[in-house]
Length: 64
Image (cartoon, rainbow, N blue to C red; front, side, top):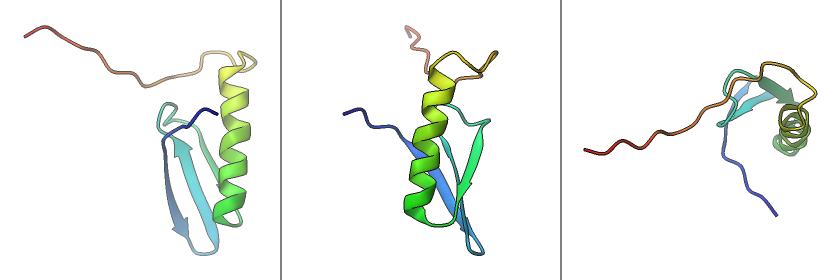
């Protein structure tokens, strides 16, 4: 099982979040569990190649 980091918050009755690897793509749910399901679906869409020009976040290691 793969684990993914995500950022989320509650706005009124809505739960909003994004996958940390893909911060430009927000989704929302009616509950925290619903949000996690939407995030899983979003990950499938973003990582499958069906959405063109997906922006990603990565780390770059530099020698000092």
